[in-house]
Length: 64
Image (cartoon, rainbow, N blue to C red; front, side, top):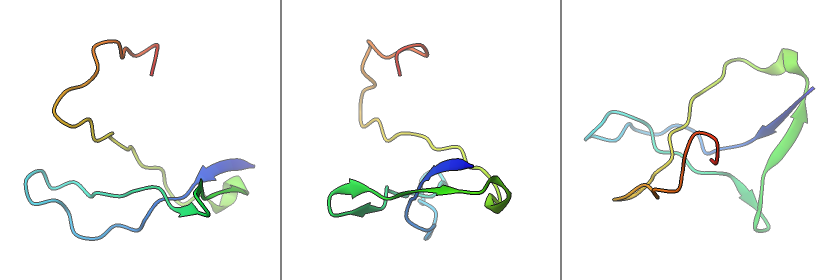
């Protein structure tokens, strides 16, 4: 079994970097998630956060 958090479907890629912008699916103010069978997983994706102008200096690979 796998815990999966759901995100919006891909639309058009952003023009300045060619990546797709997505967001978490929410229901009643809470993240939409499911427990699914591992055999139902088709592929994985890497998500990059939208930091804004500055990434907080206190963030490291061990704290985020």
